[in-house]
Length: 277
Image (tube, rainbow, N blue to C red; front, side, top):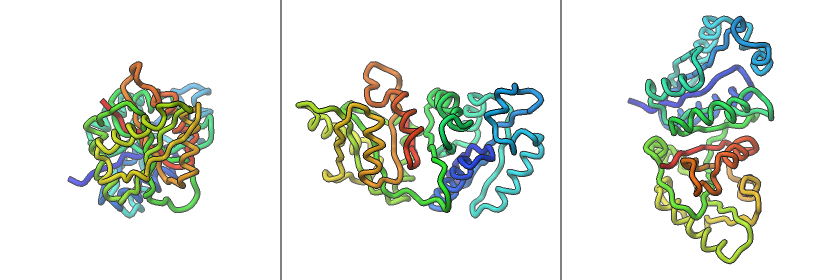
């Protein structure tokens, strides 16, 4: 069976960007798409909730939403199907993973305080952390989606091991012929260089990329890890960022959920969140 990518659709510009990116990836991977919509009945949700939902979404019935997405799916250059659910985000995520076994879940991100931005930071991210599943967050961007080839992976001195779902993304990097770089962010100190070398070694050991040359280690001296990672994106002209989401622990360090959320909210390029165990 060909791999699948699940795209969270809500009729917003951010979702359109996510769909463009997912379609390009699906073409490269010979994968199929699942267009997933979380339906909110305007008769059952509060006025506050309606404010956060694009107007196109809340004046339609569930049947109309399904038909609209089916028409959209038929126009795509890759096989696609539609799934519309009125369940909670946690239930939908669990059911989607079990039913489709996707390679990734893909969501769009717009400006701050947008519905999808809130969904990712307040609902989708905790739910995905619960099932420990890879999440690709795509910022709103005009025009045709560009396949990411210059991939930046943020790492620290602590070793990590990808969980099974995240390890399954290795074929994605191979198909993209990704050119990786490792960024290590730390304040000035006598152990900064040694910690950066440790981060590089951990990424190599994870096996996401065929090889990571020594000259692809990039060190950023910054007190703020999230700002340092975003700065590295600009410095290296990266077109995707990989963040590692560790189980909550004292050694979460650089990848505490708030840092991941900040990078997801402010990165100008897609962010792939992979889970470790």
